[in-house]
Image 1 (cartoon, rainbow, N blue to C red):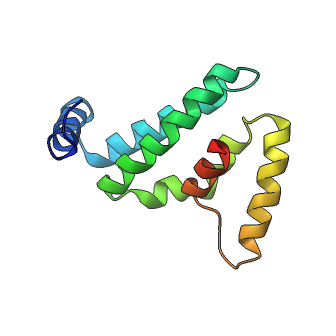
Image 2 (cartoon, rainbow, N blue to C red; image 1 turned 90 degrees about the horizontal axis):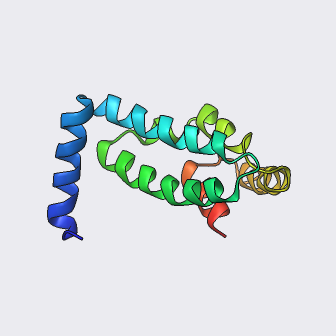
Image 3 (cartoon, rainbow, N blue to C red; image 1 turned 120 degrees about the vertical axis):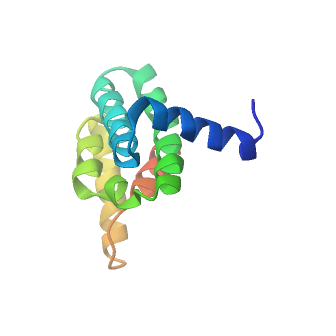
Length: 116
């Protein structure tokens, strides 16, 4: 594994070569998370992969400064709709508690919820 000071710029350079503009990199990463979410229906290994992919996507999009795309309600709803029913219900309760604090749930909060 490369040192983060070397690895991150290298990874970013590779992604830029592969996909071009940062917004395309961001969209491809979000699309990858959403595709993994769709595979989770009834598949525990895909759910585990999603739990791994989500923080990685968050880190990358923070660095690319595309955080708002990740926190968009559409993105969160698309992921939650693919979760098992019990997780959807538990997340609805969690999101309700967040909204009672006068703010919207974030991608990182959904990620944290899924990791626990």
